Length: 339
Image 1 (tube, rainbow, N blue to C red):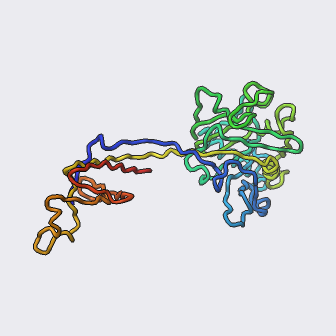
Image 2 (image 1 turned 90 degrees about the horizontal axis):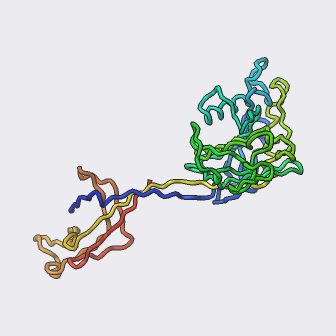
């Protein structure tokens, strides 16, 4: 076996962005939204949403829905007599800390600080590394009112960051194109933006004030139960939120993943690797079995091994077909390592 040291110019690094549909089975636009029937009674914190019946073959969670309230209202107290300590307060606090990195701040949408927020958390396996800004389009329907939302990434010259990475405002529009009929920036006239789009953590936070605004003011006239925790049922806002998503019947989203590749170029000169390392070509007396190999040696290259300085094998690259090599031929083999 013979070794050849690689030079620095023989190795180069490349990064490639891979864009793919976010939903199961390479679907870009999800039109079917199914929850397990038991969730409404047993889960006070979130609903998992599937693309088909939860017990069907191939069913997978696409995203989860949650409701948060900064005052702890809109859901039943965890402990009777301890007001404000409820599922809605826990959800609000969880996402507030995730997004803002500070448990003492509140969600602010434009100039509006709502009590209620609705959260869509895309399942991690759906987007791998991050969501692709500009591909987010969500249609919500409440009664006769329909609202289509997107992110404003295509209109920004600079990107804002929080503790959870990039953050974009959610506005009225579709596929990154902002609808300016009610407000030049796509916001509601009186309730600020419709929410926050956080592609690096797969989270969408919707502004409750914007959703419950009248349709003439850019909202859905959605009814949100913000009664005190002691007077509320276990999860009175999760089901209505799921219903407006389901009635909208369209959720478009794509994912983005950066694949880093190492390219290793193995250069085989005409004077190199012309003799086979297969011991079967040597006779018992130590001579070449075939006389033709004395004056016209040749070999077939089939495998490239990558070793460290201690001659420890780190990786093996197989050629798609054997490559004939002799003193009249040179070869350039490119090896691609993805990670």
